[in-house]
Length: 238
Image (cartoon, rainbow, N blue to C red; front, side, top):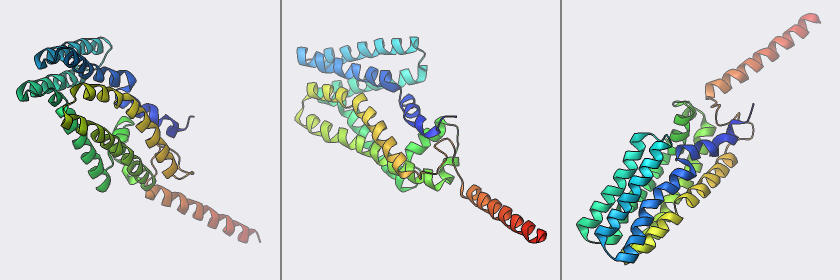
């Protein structure tokens, strides 16, 4: 049987949509940035982004992606375009992305503080563990430590996006969006898994096998009982 912990990165990547999904998500913003660099027209740039978004949506639907996920992704492109058209600022096409990353950083940080780290919620849901992972102190602590890596991921994006947005560099924002999507997600998965493994005790059975405190106590009690019975049997023989 394979070690459940070694499967963690693959499971997390699939939950995030994998490399293909992350790359697909960057295409509409890049289309907007390119169209803006060429035309300096917000309507033309928005149309370019929406057209590419529709093309990506059709491709994903044919590939078996759930319609709801496709519609949410396409809806985000449309809303971003509406914001840019309303404000008349090309850089505001990326305003929704800034708000999303800020909200995500806050949500992940709060989840750690209240001892419901979102990394554990996501992976526990994927593994159909319910809340059993939270009853394992080692898993809870490891998920909490690893979740801080995800907070840093969103903060890194904000550190790059906010100055570019403030300066009004829409084209640079589009390419920064692409550069800080899949490459950063891949690095985050790798680093958070390393942190998770470093924090998890060496004798732990793995990510797929939460150990509740009562289970450990029962095991210790059983061992103690077995030892007592063995000693009693030796005394009887004497």
